[in-house]
Length: 98
Image (tube, rainbow, N blue to C red):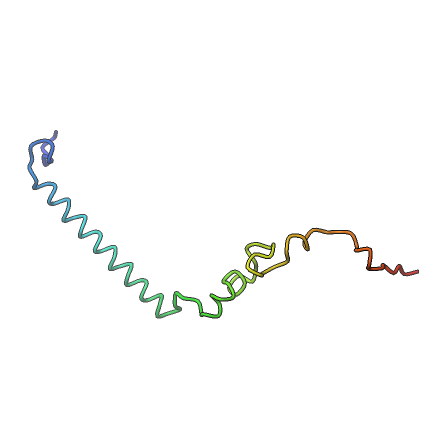
């Protein structure tokens, strides 16, 4: 070693470990408080939550104007069978123009 602090496993005792624990708690508290402050500013400026109506309808449709799954999941979009091109049913007649 080059004269640095000796840790717990090298006979330095608990002093170095205690300093590191204090530093961990200080950094965690700082990070929490700064993040909390930023979140409060954002919440006041524009809010975090969508309205209850938007949540009920689904954020894919109300915010992004699209459906994440275009195969009828949760009643949105066309079912898979409808999106596949199928021949005209026999009961429906096709009129050709002359």
